[in-house]
Amino acid sequence: MALANEIMNPDILGGLKTIVFDCDGVLIDSYEANMHYYGTIRKELGLPPLSDEEKYYVHTRTHKEAVTRIVPEDLFDEAWKLVKAFDSSSLHQYLKRSDGVREFLWWLRDAGFGLAVNTSRGDTMDGILTMMDLEGFFYPVMTSDKVCVPKPHPEGIFTIMREHSVQPHEVAYIGDSIVDEKTARAAGVRFWAYKDANMTAEVHIDDFWAIKAAMQRCYKGRRQSF
Image (cartoon, rainbow, N blue to C red; front, side, top):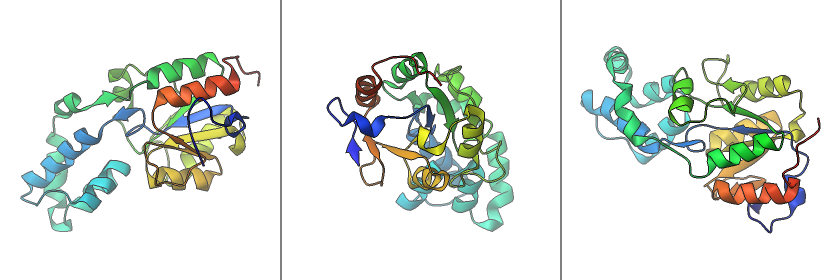
């Protein structure tokens, strides 16, 4: 395990062709938005606030999994009515792009790396990329709507590898949760943990400026030849 910085051993970062990003907690800081959304559902149903364990769960799982976990079965029908009527635009004020990620993406793309997304989000992903001015960087964008089995199943990563014609050792997956760690392990790709020193990862990233500097030192900004 290594901490991403300008003086880290560049060999740890070598041999990559594709970088895959999780969305929530990595590309964007959506924690407050998720807490507001799921907290509102609980409140409207007359249920107590989310526990710490429930907060972690809803932030790292698919929408369906999250709602099913925090709502008793006898209130499912009412909960899904609330979901359907919820004004998602009310969450925009709670969302923000992760600091330095756009600059990192620009450098990666200029250096010739393939970029993709593997997220538990569903049909909201395109809107998020547009809102955060991140559209056009990624292909494919794998969401829970595009796979048969969501993370931590490796289906999304496998699809990305096929599309990019790369092998597992040529891929790094940047995530912020144990679900992402398990996904990377199941796919056999490198796992880079974002802002969580407690996870088992080849590289730990405190911020995107640091990993950008480390990558520039390793690859020296030259376009890759595949």
